[in-house]
Length: 186
Image (cartoon, rainbow, N blue to C red; front, side):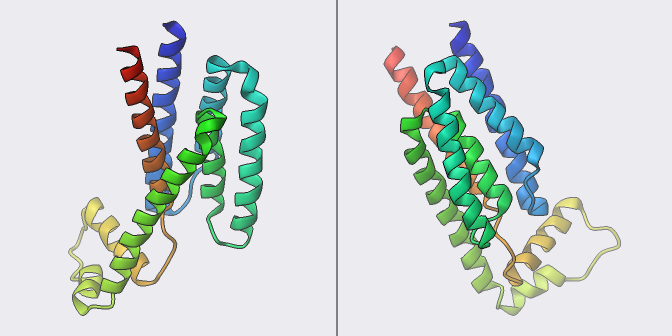
């Protein structure tokens, strides 16, 4: 019971760290290394509590994922922070759940990319550009400033905040697994 509680606390902490990473990625298009390291630490702790015999396999898979995604980042197919964060989240789940987790993250990435593609197509319309530029009041609210900044990024075809997909995919995976776990206990 205590170990189950500890895993729950670590999962909640990991999801909180992923949310912070997603917000940072959205606002600044950067995922801080400390959030990646803390997420990986939560994952390692979960693996050590849940099944310490498989920690080597989990770390090996995370390293392989980092290597493959690191090469993709080197070719600028994905952001470096995204590559590191995906490798870190693989440590949160048992080895047999890594592929389903990666699939859900990829699906989340497809949704985020689709939204940004649609927004980019709309950005060609004069009303969209006017919303980005608009008349600047003396002091923009923080939310309005972020909205205008994001509209400009979309119109200029800048990077997509994939950290949103990593968070959403991992949270969805955690919820579906928690649902199965709770069903098995009843």
